[in-house]
Length: 344
Image (cartoon, rainbow, N blue to C red; front, side, top):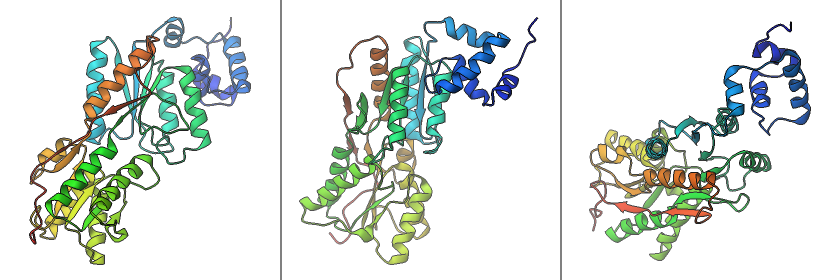
Protein backbone atom coordinates (compact mmCIF):
# COMPACT_ATOMS: atom_id res chain seq x y z
CA UNK A 1 0.00 0.00 0.00
CA UNK A 2 1.34 3.42 -0.96
CA UNK A 3 2.07 5.44 2.21
CA UNK A 4 0.12 8.66 2.76
CA UNK A 5 2.06 11.83 2.24
CA UNK A 6 1.45 15.43 3.30
CA UNK A 7 1.60 18.40 0.98
CA UNK A 8 4.70 19.62 2.84
CA UNK A 9 6.47 16.29 2.26
CA UNK A 10 5.46 16.25 -1.38
CA UNK A 11 6.73 19.81 -1.87
CA UNK A 12 10.02 18.99 -0.17
CA UNK A 13 10.59 15.95 -2.36
CA UNK A 14 9.75 17.94 -5.49
CA UNK A 15 11.99 20.81 -4.42
CA UNK A 16 9.18 23.40 -4.61
CA UNK A 17 6.94 25.34 -2.23
CA UNK A 18 3.57 24.10 -1.00
CA UNK A 19 2.03 26.98 -2.95
CA UNK A 20 3.46 25.53 -6.17
CA UNK A 21 2.01 22.12 -5.33
CA UNK A 22 -1.37 23.78 -4.79
CA UNK A 23 -1.09 25.52 -8.17
CA UNK A 24 -0.37 22.23 -9.91
CA UNK A 25 -3.37 20.63 -8.18
CA UNK A 26 -5.66 23.46 -9.28
CA UNK A 27 -4.25 23.42 -12.83
CA UNK A 28 -2.97 26.95 -12.55
CA UNK A 29 -1.43 27.98 -15.91
CA UNK A 30 1.18 30.12 -14.17
CA UNK A 31 3.36 27.08 -13.38
CA UNK A 32 6.15 26.15 -15.80
CA UNK A 33 5.71 22.90 -17.70
CA UNK A 34 8.90 21.42 -16.25
CA UNK A 35 7.80 22.09 -12.66
CA UNK A 36 4.27 20.88 -13.35
CA UNK A 37 5.54 17.59 -14.75
CA UNK A 38 7.88 16.98 -11.80
CA UNK A 39 5.19 17.70 -9.20
CA UNK A 40 2.49 15.78 -11.07
CA UNK A 41 4.66 12.66 -11.21
CA UNK A 42 4.89 12.70 -7.41
CA UNK A 43 1.16 13.39 -7.06
CA UNK A 44 0.42 10.37 -9.22
CA UNK A 45 3.00 8.17 -7.46
CA UNK A 46 1.57 8.87 -4.01
CA UNK A 47 -2.03 9.21 -5.22
CA UNK A 48 -2.13 12.54 -3.39
CA UNK A 49 -5.71 13.87 -3.36
CA UNK A 50 -6.66 16.19 -0.47
CA UNK A 51 -10.42 16.30 -0.15
CA UNK A 52 -10.72 20.08 -0.48
CA UNK A 53 -8.82 20.14 -3.74
CA UNK A 54 -10.65 17.10 -5.09
CA UNK A 55 -13.95 18.86 -4.52
CA UNK A 56 -12.64 21.96 -6.27
CA UNK A 57 -11.54 20.02 -9.32
CA UNK A 58 -14.96 18.49 -9.95
CA UNK A 59 -16.92 21.69 -9.36
CA UNK A 60 -17.93 23.76 -12.34
CA UNK A 61 -18.16 26.84 -10.13
CA UNK A 62 -17.03 27.76 -6.65
CA UNK A 63 -19.55 30.61 -6.28
CA UNK A 64 -16.64 32.67 -5.00
CA UNK A 65 -15.29 35.86 -6.52
CA UNK A 66 -12.03 37.63 -5.74
CA UNK A 67 -11.19 41.29 -5.23
CA UNK A 68 -7.70 42.73 -4.90
CA UNK A 69 -7.37 46.21 -3.39
CA UNK A 70 -4.20 48.08 -2.49
CA UNK A 71 -4.91 48.64 1.21
CA UNK A 72 -8.22 47.83 2.90
CA UNK A 73 -7.37 50.22 5.76
CA UNK A 74 -7.95 53.07 3.29
CA UNK A 75 -11.68 53.94 3.56
CA UNK A 76 -11.82 54.51 -0.21
CA UNK A 77 -11.06 50.85 -0.90
CA UNK A 78 -13.20 49.68 2.02
CA UNK A 79 -16.26 51.48 0.63
CA UNK A 80 -15.61 50.02 -2.81
CA UNK A 81 -15.29 46.49 -1.48
CA UNK A 82 -18.33 46.62 0.80
CA UNK A 83 -20.62 47.71 -2.03
CA UNK A 84 -19.25 45.03 -4.35
CA UNK A 85 -19.66 42.43 -1.59
CA UNK A 86 -23.27 43.48 -1.03
CA UNK A 87 -24.11 42.98 -4.71
CA UNK A 88 -22.16 39.70 -4.89
CA UNK A 89 -24.11 38.31 -1.94
CA UNK A 90 -27.38 39.31 -3.57
CA UNK A 91 -26.34 37.31 -6.63
CA UNK A 92 -25.38 34.25 -4.59
CA UNK A 93 -21.61 34.73 -4.52
CA UNK A 94 -19.04 35.14 -1.77
CA UNK A 95 -16.52 37.92 -2.42
CA UNK A 96 -13.03 37.21 -1.12
CA UNK A 97 -10.81 40.25 -0.57
CA UNK A 98 -7.06 40.61 -0.24
CA UNK A 99 -4.79 43.67 0.03
CA UNK A 100 -1.66 43.80 -2.10
CA UNK A 101 -0.04 46.48 0.14
CA UNK A 102 2.98 46.78 -2.17
CA UNK A 103 4.08 46.56 -5.82
CA UNK A 104 6.03 43.39 -5.06
CA UNK A 105 3.16 41.58 -3.34
CA UNK A 106 0.52 42.19 -6.00
CA UNK A 107 1.40 39.13 -8.10
CA UNK A 108 1.28 36.76 -5.13
CA UNK A 109 -2.03 38.25 -3.97
CA UNK A 110 -3.59 37.55 -7.37
CA UNK A 111 -2.22 34.00 -7.36
CA UNK A 112 -3.63 33.45 -3.87
CA UNK A 113 -7.12 34.34 -5.10
CA UNK A 114 -6.77 32.12 -8.17
CA UNK A 115 -5.73 29.26 -5.90
CA UNK A 116 -8.97 29.70 -3.95
CA UNK A 117 -10.77 28.74 -7.17
CA UNK A 118 -12.59 32.05 -7.58
CA UNK A 119 -14.83 32.23 -10.64
CA UNK A 120 -13.79 35.79 -11.50
CA UNK A 121 -11.79 38.66 -10.12
CA UNK A 122 -11.86 42.45 -9.66
CA UNK A 123 -8.37 43.94 -9.51
CA UNK A 124 -7.09 47.38 -8.55
CA UNK A 125 -3.55 47.10 -9.86
CA UNK A 126 -0.76 49.41 -8.77
CA UNK A 127 1.53 47.83 -11.35
CA UNK A 128 -0.89 48.32 -14.25
CA UNK A 129 -1.36 51.96 -13.18
CA UNK A 130 2.30 52.72 -13.83
CA UNK A 131 2.98 55.09 -16.73
CA UNK A 132 5.01 52.31 -18.31
CA UNK A 133 3.86 48.93 -16.95
CA UNK A 134 6.65 46.35 -16.89
CA UNK A 135 6.60 43.67 -19.58
CA UNK A 136 6.48 40.99 -16.87
CA UNK A 137 3.40 42.63 -15.34
CA UNK A 138 1.56 42.72 -18.65
CA UNK A 139 2.44 39.11 -19.46
CA UNK A 140 1.36 37.93 -16.02
CA UNK A 141 -1.96 39.78 -16.20
CA UNK A 142 -2.62 38.42 -19.68
CA UNK A 143 -1.98 34.89 -18.45
CA UNK A 144 -4.26 35.44 -15.46
CA UNK A 145 -6.99 36.79 -17.74
CA UNK A 146 -6.86 33.63 -19.83
CA UNK A 147 -7.50 31.70 -16.63
CA UNK A 148 -10.61 33.56 -15.50
CA UNK A 149 -12.68 36.72 -16.15
CA UNK A 150 -11.05 39.89 -14.79
CA UNK A 151 -12.29 43.47 -14.40
CA UNK A 152 -9.77 46.21 -13.60
CA UNK A 153 -10.62 49.29 -11.54
CA UNK A 154 -7.85 51.43 -13.00
CA UNK A 155 -7.10 54.20 -15.41
CA UNK A 156 -6.98 52.40 -18.80
CA UNK A 157 -3.58 51.78 -20.36
CA UNK A 158 -2.96 51.03 -24.03
CA UNK A 159 -0.71 48.09 -23.29
CA UNK A 160 -3.50 46.10 -21.61
CA UNK A 161 -7.00 45.94 -23.08
CA UNK A 162 -10.04 46.37 -20.81
CA UNK A 163 -12.56 46.08 -19.49
CA UNK A 164 -11.92 48.83 -16.98
CA UNK A 165 -13.98 50.75 -14.45
CA UNK A 166 -12.53 54.19 -13.71
CA UNK A 167 -13.71 57.47 -12.18
CA UNK A 168 -13.60 60.74 -14.10
CA UNK A 169 -10.33 61.77 -12.47
CA UNK A 170 -9.65 64.59 -14.91
CA UNK A 171 -13.10 66.16 -14.66
CA UNK A 172 -13.01 65.95 -10.87
CA UNK A 173 -9.69 67.77 -10.54
CA UNK A 174 -10.60 70.34 -13.17
CA UNK A 175 -13.74 71.17 -11.19
CA UNK A 176 -11.87 71.35 -7.87
CA UNK A 177 -9.12 73.60 -9.20
CA UNK A 178 -11.54 75.87 -11.03
CA UNK A 179 -13.58 76.20 -7.85
CA UNK A 180 -10.59 77.40 -5.83
CA UNK A 181 -9.63 79.82 -8.60
CA UNK A 182 -13.18 81.15 -8.77
CA UNK A 183 -12.99 81.94 -5.06
CA UNK A 184 -9.95 84.11 -5.74
CA UNK A 185 -7.11 81.77 -4.75
CA UNK A 186 -3.96 82.03 -6.86
CA UNK A 187 -1.23 80.28 -4.84
CA UNK A 188 -2.44 76.69 -5.22
CA UNK A 189 -0.52 73.63 -4.06
CA UNK A 190 -0.81 69.95 -5.02
CA UNK A 191 0.11 67.37 -2.37
CA UNK A 192 0.23 63.57 -2.55
CA UNK A 193 0.60 60.69 -4.97
CA UNK A 194 3.67 59.64 -6.95
CA UNK A 195 4.40 61.03 -10.40
CA UNK A 196 5.09 57.62 -11.98
CA UNK A 197 1.43 56.52 -12.07
CA UNK A 198 -1.29 57.25 -14.61
CA UNK A 199 -3.86 58.27 -12.01
CA UNK A 200 -1.60 60.87 -10.40
CA UNK A 201 -0.46 62.15 -13.80
CA UNK A 202 -4.07 62.58 -14.93
CA UNK A 203 -5.11 64.43 -11.77
CA UNK A 204 -2.06 66.67 -11.73
CA UNK A 205 -2.41 67.45 -15.44
CA UNK A 206 -6.00 68.55 -14.84
CA UNK A 207 -4.80 70.74 -11.96
CA UNK A 208 -2.22 72.39 -14.24
CA UNK A 209 -4.68 72.81 -17.11
CA UNK A 210 -7.18 74.59 -14.87
CA UNK A 211 -4.44 76.97 -13.70
CA UNK A 212 -3.56 77.63 -17.33
CA UNK A 213 -7.16 78.62 -18.05
CA UNK A 214 -6.65 81.49 -15.58
CA UNK A 215 -3.32 82.46 -17.09
CA UNK A 216 -1.34 80.80 -14.29
CA UNK A 217 1.46 78.25 -14.37
CA UNK A 218 1.91 75.46 -11.86
CA UNK A 219 4.63 76.25 -9.33
CA UNK A 220 7.12 73.39 -8.76
CA UNK A 221 7.74 74.83 -5.29
CA UNK A 222 4.08 74.19 -4.50
CA UNK A 223 4.01 70.62 -5.82
CA UNK A 224 4.88 67.86 -3.35
CA UNK A 225 4.15 64.29 -4.46
CA UNK A 226 4.94 62.52 -1.22
CA UNK A 227 2.67 59.47 -1.30
CA UNK A 228 -0.84 58.41 -0.36
CA UNK A 229 -1.10 58.42 3.43
CA UNK A 230 -1.75 60.93 6.21
CA UNK A 231 2.01 61.02 6.82
CA UNK A 232 2.41 62.08 3.18
CA UNK A 233 0.21 65.10 3.87
CA UNK A 234 2.22 65.97 6.96
CA UNK A 235 5.45 65.70 4.99
CA UNK A 236 4.15 67.91 2.19
CA UNK A 237 2.87 70.71 4.43
CA UNK A 238 6.01 70.70 6.58
CA UNK A 239 8.07 71.02 3.40
CA UNK A 240 6.14 74.14 2.40
CA UNK A 241 6.56 75.64 5.86
CA UNK A 242 10.29 74.90 5.93
CA UNK A 243 10.90 76.41 2.49
CA UNK A 244 8.65 79.42 3.08
CA UNK A 245 6.34 78.56 0.15
CA UNK A 246 3.04 78.56 1.98
CA UNK A 247 0.04 78.28 -0.39
CA UNK A 248 -3.33 79.85 0.21
CA UNK A 249 -5.09 76.68 -1.00
CA UNK A 250 -4.21 72.98 -1.27
CA UNK A 251 -5.60 70.14 -3.37
CA UNK A 252 -4.61 66.69 -2.16
CA UNK A 253 -4.53 63.29 -3.82
CA UNK A 254 -6.99 61.76 -1.33
CA UNK A 255 -8.73 62.22 2.01
CA UNK A 256 -5.90 60.55 3.93
CA UNK A 257 -3.34 63.04 2.61
CA UNK A 258 -5.73 65.89 3.47
CA UNK A 259 -5.95 64.53 7.01
CA UNK A 260 -2.19 65.00 7.37
CA UNK A 261 -2.36 68.50 5.87
CA UNK A 262 -5.07 69.50 8.31
CA UNK A 263 -3.04 68.10 11.20
CA UNK A 264 -0.07 70.35 10.39
CA UNK A 265 -2.35 73.36 9.93
CA UNK A 266 -3.78 72.78 13.40
CA UNK A 267 -0.33 72.38 14.94
CA UNK A 268 0.88 75.60 13.26
CA UNK A 269 -2.26 77.58 14.18
CA UNK A 270 -3.25 77.96 10.54
CA UNK A 271 -7.01 78.34 10.42
CA UNK A 272 -8.94 76.36 7.81
CA UNK A 273 -10.43 77.90 5.70
CA UNK A 274 -9.54 81.44 6.92
CA UNK A 275 -5.79 81.08 6.38
CA UNK A 276 -5.75 78.20 3.93
CA UNK A 277 -8.38 76.26 1.97
CA UNK A 278 -8.20 72.50 1.47
CA UNK A 279 -9.83 70.22 -1.11
CA UNK A 280 -9.41 66.45 -0.88
CA UNK A 281 -10.53 63.51 -3.01
CA UNK A 282 -12.57 60.34 -2.31
CA UNK A 283 -15.36 61.88 -0.19
CA UNK A 284 -14.91 59.10 2.37
CA UNK A 285 -16.11 59.26 5.97
CA UNK A 286 -12.83 61.04 6.77
CA UNK A 287 -13.93 64.12 4.83
CA UNK A 288 -17.20 64.20 6.75
CA UNK A 289 -15.72 63.49 10.16
CA UNK A 290 -13.14 66.30 10.43
CA UNK A 291 -13.61 69.85 11.64
CA UNK A 292 -14.08 71.66 9.45
CA UNK A 293 -15.59 69.06 7.15
CA UNK A 294 -13.54 68.72 3.97
CA UNK A 295 -14.59 69.87 0.55
CA UNK A 296 -13.89 66.71 -1.44
CA UNK A 297 -14.04 65.31 -4.96
CA UNK A 298 -16.54 62.48 -4.84
CA UNK A 299 -15.35 59.75 -7.21
CA UNK A 300 -18.04 57.41 -5.86
CA UNK A 301 -16.07 54.34 -4.72
CA UNK A 302 -19.30 52.52 -3.90
CA UNK A 303 -20.53 52.93 -7.46
CA UNK A 304 -17.14 51.85 -8.80
CA UNK A 305 -17.38 48.63 -6.81
CA UNK A 306 -20.96 48.05 -7.92
CA UNK A 307 -20.27 48.63 -11.62
CA UNK A 308 -17.17 46.45 -11.52
CA UNK A 309 -19.12 43.59 -9.95
CA UNK A 310 -21.92 43.93 -12.50
CA UNK A 311 -19.41 43.91 -15.37
CA UNK A 312 -17.63 40.86 -13.94
CA UNK A 313 -20.86 38.87 -13.71
CA UNK A 314 -21.65 39.74 -17.34
CA UNK A 315 -18.22 38.47 -18.39
CA UNK A 316 -18.73 35.26 -16.42
CA UNK A 317 -22.09 34.76 -18.08
CA UNK A 318 -20.37 35.13 -21.47
CA UNK A 319 -22.20 38.39 -22.10
CA UNK A 320 -20.31 41.28 -23.62
CA UNK A 321 -19.53 44.16 -21.27
CA UNK A 322 -21.24 47.31 -22.67
CA UNK A 323 -17.94 49.14 -23.13
CA UNK A 324 -14.24 48.61 -22.57
CA UNK A 325 -14.12 51.54 -20.13
CA UNK A 326 -16.98 52.24 -17.73
CA UNK A 327 -16.53 55.80 -16.45
CA UNK A 328 -17.89 56.85 -13.06
CA UNK A 329 -18.85 60.54 -12.79
CA UNK A 330 -16.96 62.72 -10.32
CA UNK A 331 -18.55 65.65 -8.50
CA UNK A 332 -17.24 68.28 -6.11
CA UNK A 333 -18.86 68.25 -2.68
CA UNK A 334 -18.36 71.70 -1.12
CA UNK A 335 -18.03 71.83 2.65
CA UNK A 336 -16.40 74.01 5.28
CA UNK A 337 -12.71 73.63 4.39
CA UNK A 338 -12.85 76.09 1.47
CA UNK A 339 -13.61 79.83 1.39
CA UNK A 340 -12.52 83.02 -0.32
CA UNK A 341 -8.99 84.12 0.60
CA UNK A 342 -8.92 86.86 3.24
CA UNK A 343 -7.23 89.30 0.89
CA UNK A 344 -10.26 89.08 -1.45
